Image 1 (cartoon, rainbow, N blue to C red):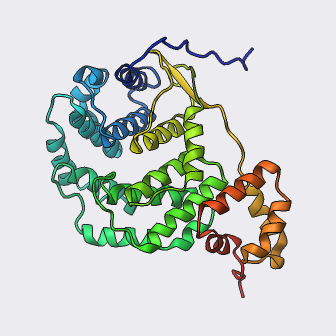
Image 2 (cartoon, rainbow, N blue to C red; image 1 turned 45 degrees about the vertical axis):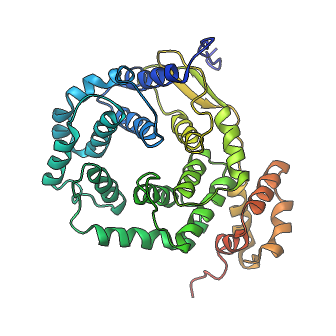
Length: 356
């Protein structure tokens, strides 16, 4: 019976310290091999969340990663294409409490190799520069010009009225880097603040908890308070994760949603990583998925062709009438969550974009 999910038997009691120990151990030792790039990605993300939310860890809790740390110079010299993951893991291990001082020398080596300047993407250059700056090393030749380009991208709020997950994730990550993961004011202009709101509306309409959680974190780092409609739904999503038995080398699961939803909870000082864990391979799934109305709204607008309008009060009745009750409720909650919903919809409707 392949559709039967075997759940891990929960420990009757588990302290937050024990939970973090099992979490680190499971991701470092029981999900993937260390030569798998997804191992690097998962462990870099977990350690980054723990570090930027101020987790207090003992060196014993980090010991599952000691073998990787001991070989880290050889790994980064050979696997230079993954230098950002490897350097991030090294820095976070040390900053979380692992005895060692390798990251400064490695950061200097990365700068001498010009690895950041070898990136095609401004976003990746920004990530590399932010990492190197953690150890006082400059990673790019002209950081002011880089920052100007990043601000130019996020200030164009029209970009974020259209469903484009790649652009939305780039928006959140730019805010993470500019804010040093909440450690300083990213100095966002009004256009960028509106961009976050528009991207959040799309993520909520799509019921994409992964993206919406990142957007809410970015808003908090920018000094904004995310709408209660969004955070309330994300709280319910976070409570609904289910930890099931997995196997080494498994395919993708809902681990990233699990990470970023709990990152948001930690950022807002709410209980996080509360699902009970036991050591061993684990697979994460969401128990309360629902399909948002975003795709159906787009199709309905496309089908209207020249009859569609950018005026939300005019279009509200037509769109809501064609949705299920659940889709209708999600759309109403989205509208109520933002004072800028009408201007968002004007861009989303794409009226007047015809080619002459």
